[in-house]
Each structure stands twice: as C-alpha cells, then as structure tokens.
Image (cartoon, rainbow, N blue to C red; front, side, top):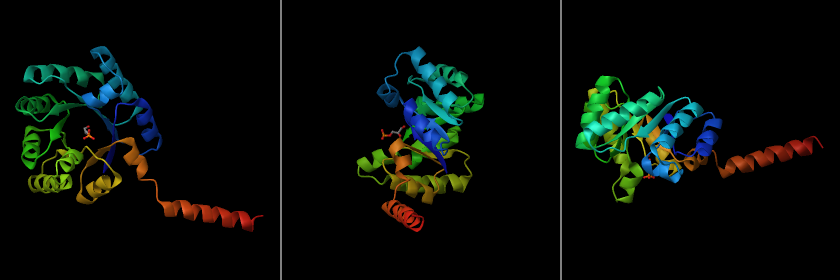
Length: 218
Ligand code: G3P
C-alpha cells in the first residue's frame, strides 16, 4: 500500500519524506489556500517545488468546472513535471475530461467520490486513481470503509487497473482498515502517518531496556 501525504505545506511534506516512507502527495484547492498559496503563477511554482521534494506522484487539482477549461488546465499542470497527476472532480464534465486525459496519456485522480457507482464510472473513464472520501462519508453517518470494500471487489471483478486512493483519512485506524481491505493508496494528514509510530508499551519497554543496560554497565 502506498502512503501519500494530504497537504500542501512543504514542512509537512519534508517531515513525512524524511521518515522514508512517503510515496506521493495529494493537494486540493482548500489545502493550497490553507498553505497560503494563491495566484496562478504561485500555484504552479508550488506544485513544481513539491515535485522537487518528493519522488512520487503529486496530485494537482483543476479549478475549472467545464470540460474545455479542465483540459486546458490539466495540460498545463501535467507540463510542470512528469510526476504530476491531474485531479479532476466527479462531475459529468469531469468524467469526459478523465477519458480525454486517458487518451492523451495524462494520468488522473478522480476526486470527490462518494459512491460505488461514481467509482465504476471513473474507472471506466480510465482514471489512474480514484479518491473515495471516507472521513466525510463517516461524518454523514455512512460507513466510508464499506465503500472501499465495494470498490476493491468491483475493481477486482472486472480487472480495472484504476488504483483506489483512500482519502479524507482522519485517524490511524482508518489507515489500518484500508490496508486490511486492500486499498492501493492512502492519503493522510501528517499526524496520521506519524501516529502509526506510537505505542505506550514501546516507550515503556525501551525505557526498561535502557535502565537495565545502565544498571548492568554502571
Ligand atoms: O484531499 C482530499 C481529502 O483527503 C480531504 O480530506 O479531511 O478535508 O475530508 P478532508
């Protein structure tokens, strides 16, 4: 399972990358705004900077909502770096754009996916990745992980090559369950990735080992 970080903050990307387990980055317009990045030139420059930091796919989202605009923006984003994956929303125009990008050889991530039907459509259109938002489904009293289960089954049934990129991950158990179910990728905030490190018994055990060593070598 690949680990992507879901942020546009360079210091967070560096920290996850330093751990040596990072496979890529996802961003969205909200995350770019949160990182204080605005204006077309700055946004393109920022994506370039992220691509220099990480060896792996970097999702960059289109802002346009109609087909022609999506294609124009996607081509521009794809030119920034070979690791850019164009993120396209699950809409009628988005699905058309996914198909066109597929034919053009531009890799895509279909975002804002909340149902198995949407996931089938995105895979049929040739999306490289599809992003079900499991945390937001949970927020709406719907089991987000069940959607991942459905997608794993459906994609396996028909041999779709589209990768399931579990997004809107809120905590470490989301990540662990996605691994059990067989999601191809999880994209998480930094605290979820680093949260995997900790267990109180590890800390207690290490303190005891060091204390015993100190006593024996006093
Ligand atoms: O990148 C999209 C997704 O991960 C958003 O997560 O926490 O805003 O629902 P969240």
